[in-house]
Image 1 (spheres, rainbow, N blue to C red):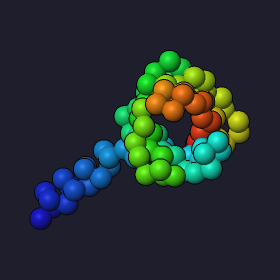
Image 2: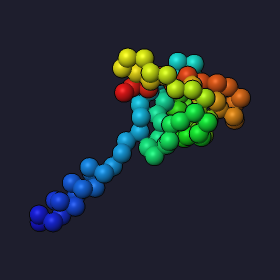
Image 3: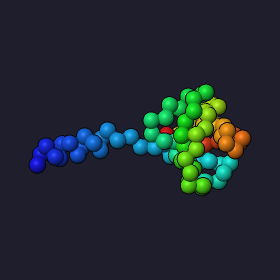
Image 4: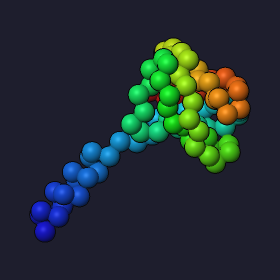
Length: 88
């Protein structure tokens, strides 16, 4: 029984979650998916709660403002730049 509990705790503790934020341009929430390397020039996957879709976008810039981080991305499918205000 202890072995099952330990394995369950290890699985929960190693699970990483998405980075939650808000897309002011689209007026909806957006998540940066776990495992994404959020660096300028890198392509990352986001989940757009407004459309209910996953999208691949390219990180253009990253700026930190107090308790939030602003990530500007380029969505090549729509040809638009988006600003994501992410919680730290």
